[in-house]
Image (cartoon, rainbow, N blue to C red; front, side, top):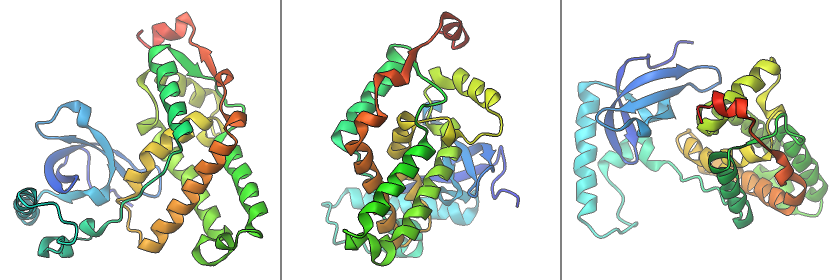
Length: 278
């Protein structure tokens, strides 16, 4: 099926509550949901981002009018006291975008420190995560699945309704899918890109979630909430996602001594530093 928007097409994109003129630079149609690399007109390239089509509108008179209406509405809201009980507005009820539910991913404090150490090791100390990882993302999720199953009998909330094992497995499959889609576009530091190209070349046909480990999985959880917020999910689906992702993070935090170690990193070689332009 052809993508809804084409490379080079002028579009309007949601960034927060407002619409901005932009241009679609690239299209990624490898997964179930197309992603578009967007450059906002008049903005620095640092604001370029990959976004789903739910945040994009055709550049048309009707949508330009909507852009103006949203701007007027936003300006009025800015001049009022921020009262959450006064959000009903004709513009909001017209567009499901404004009824989207925030996806909050609660990353435990110790895992936030791991992310900070990861950033420092890669960007400042010029280390690399050793790949393929000794414990892959797929293995981590399998271990969480078995842990969750073993605790289901003693935790009624896990076996009742929408929080049951079937939904857990769908969430875990979705995490693998999102990781595969976002790794090369959102989850790598610039310094890691030559390694990424090497790993793909040396492991052709192997899923990236069998090659990468905990470090990049944690990076995914800093991004995934933003992407999930723009999917057409009802409140029950949101609750299921939040429950299982937060439960997975708690599991990782509980077993972080198994998954997280400085042995996961190696010092980049002089040849690699040259290739990375350092």
